[in-house]
Every structure is written in structure tokens, then in C-alpha cells.
Amino acid sequence: MQKKLTITVDEEVYAGLHKVIGPRRISRFIEDLVRPHVIKMKLESAYKRMAQDEARETQALEWAEATVGDVSHEAR
Image (cartoon, rainbow, N blue to C red; front, top):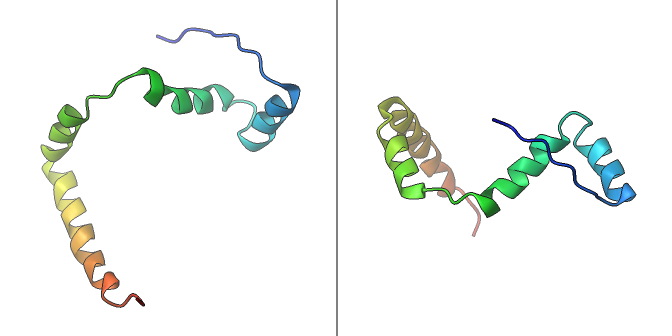
């Protein structure tokens, strides 16, 4: 469920948000910035759930194996 919140920001900040983020995306942008500071994520359980997704893990391993060779060609 969503709740409506009224906040006050400087006119210049609002204009920047409106221009850069877009008029219908400001709420989501602010929520995404604030969420990690007010809702504590349970990373360990989230990582366990991700690891149980075999298709995702296979894809991640394939990506990692495919890119490991790129590092050997990097200039030092």
C-alpha cells in the first residue's frame, strides 16, 4: 500500500528533479534513494533466495567464466 507524502524542497531542486528525472518519476526516484536508509534489508536471506534460483546461478556462472579472460588482456 502506498501513502501520500507532502515534502518541501527548494524551487531550484524541484526544477532539477522535474527536468532530469521527469515529472511522473520523482516519487519513485525519491523512494529508491530513501529506501536503503530506512528499511534494513536482510541480505543473507536475500542471497540465499537468489542462490536457490538455479537458472540465474547458471547464467551468472556462464557470464563470469566468459569475462574472466578479458582481464588477462588488460594493461597494467
